[in-house]
Amino acid sequence: MRPSALWKELPADKRLVAATAFWNDEHGMDQQVEVIVTLARKLNFRPKSLQTLPLERRAKLLAGQNDVSDAVASRALIAYHLEAERPMMAAFLDALGIAHDNGLITAEDVAAPDTATLTRGVQAITTAFPHDAVRVYLHTLVLLDGDTWAGLDGLIDTAT
Image (cartoon, rainbow, N blue to C red):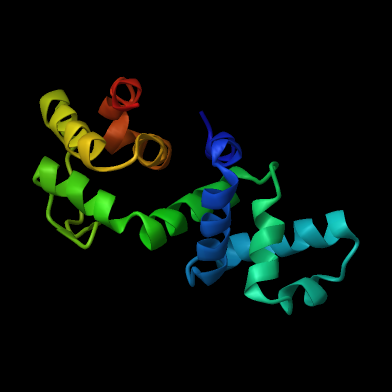
């Protein structure tokens, strides 16, 4: 699965939250410019006009797009999780024994956890959070850092 495919699968309400988080993400300027240019072309608007739209309107426009690039989808998924899923991120890292600050890993390098540790982490969040949220989170981890989280690939189906 690619980030853009995961974006397509998000329910409308989560996609709107992700789109809002995307526009608020100070690290997503390159992807924001990409979306402005793409939307301007699709809607026959001037890019400057799109930039000046209120946040809610830009978020609705982005959330309504099924065909975003992998870069945009990746940035939106990261922003979404940082904005809306911090408790789940923290619970998962706690279960794995990985040091973090409110769901953000604090170590420079994290070794790929073994299968037993990953299974324990998946079980911890599956019992505490909605299955669809867990599924999106685990897919996001694998898609964005496959080297560290490759072991989750076989566990995603057991979490849902």
